[in-house]
Length: 303
Image 1 (spheres, helix red, strand yellow):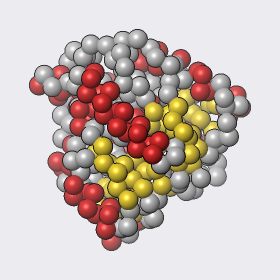
Image 2 (cartoon, one colour):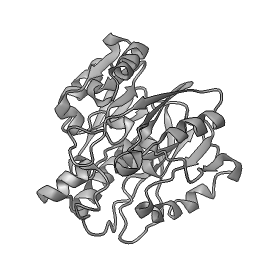
Image 3 (cartoon, helix red, strand yellow):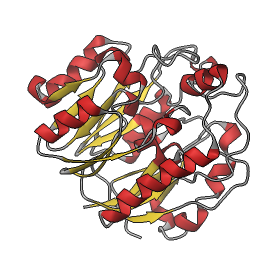
């Protein structure tokens, strides 16, 4: 398999979609890895497996409708495998295997049948000290936007998933890329206050457009930098409530085809105004676990 990913919007050819089966019991508050899961467990609304299956099947159907080849990891019993974006990500022709949190390490082995189709020289296993997850890596041609949390309390913040060493490591592997670090606000318990991954506050879409929640960044200058890259007239500004429901965590099949959650009505209308075909799927139950459409995917090949 010849990997090729240089953007979030190039025509998608092959992708890994997570699995909705045998998720195991709902986590306890102490074991919740993100603020949205924490809130769901606390309020007794953590999603049932039947609903997770129904929503992922709807997403898979849309991908296949548009001619995308969908790979799936092997099943790990009693393990939540919905969010494949956390496990790895592709930049250009290389796949980076994430150092995900230790409690999720079993997920890595489930991708071996897919990784076996990739030349071993194109697979990078990170040093133990380098932490990065795919949700914090957003590609825009020769630019890689990298969400991170570069502060002394990194090791005590559950939702801090990408550290400063990841910036140095990615710059070493991809010297031709402009890798731009963006520090995210974090909260382990309040999904209105913290950003789990960069794709929960920012996403390029279409041709030179972007979805942004400006208050998701520790430094307001980071948000303004993104706005300046795309241009004020090309930015869809998310409200705090839309950020909470993860309106930026959409998934592009191409520049002209985007999949969004069915409740994202304001975003859908804006995308259609840009001449984009919008496919809607139900994904609200899955969102209660801290991720949405982009989180569920690991793109392998785009045109």
